[in-house]
Length: 275
Image (cartoon, rainbow, N blue to C red):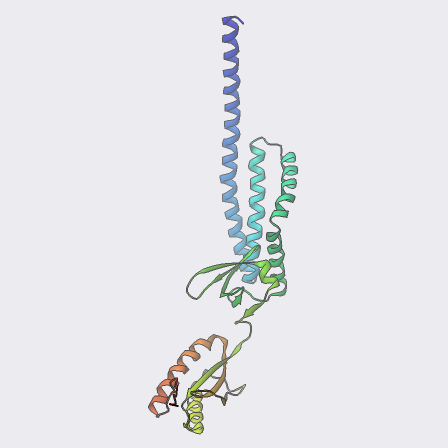
């Protein structure tokens, strides 16, 4: 190859390279613009969906699930649009995506189970947003129900992500489902104390608390003759939202009233007899 031919060959390569960079650059810029505009449109669509759901007074439990589902679908469409702008054949890409989806679906069968679990939770409604539940060994208020996970907020302000699959197939304790709850107390007193006196004091305490319901009636009964104490059971019914306030305040009232009226609380005792 002569020097002239070499120069022409190099020039041709440079020209093709520049043309490729220009074309690729245009595709990349267009893809970036599509992504930016698409993200903005998705955010706008999410806001519009939120307003529509609020206007229709859709249950918050369903709202979080729908928003999560719509957001994922829109993101998939955006990704396909970006890939198409880069010049990749979307038909081939769709076929590749479908093949990969089968493999990924097998690998992520747990997530598919979580998706099905989320649908089951929405259909049978064992809990809703705002309920306090215990499941899988943890407890908290339901903050969101997404397509794969349910988010709990604990009383000490921690977020817990529970898979919907395990929620739909496991045990759930819903403390907010019923309007009333029973508060149980076990009061230990010394042997020799008057049961009638203790019962009268407890009855006075709960009668003066307007939060304690009269139906079902409160129960005061001798529960057990333990090793070092006589155990009195006190059971009262309250509205679910009053449970902890009544529990804590009643314990404090019992302690103060028993001390004021000379009713003794027992201490663990051990009697040793010499042989």
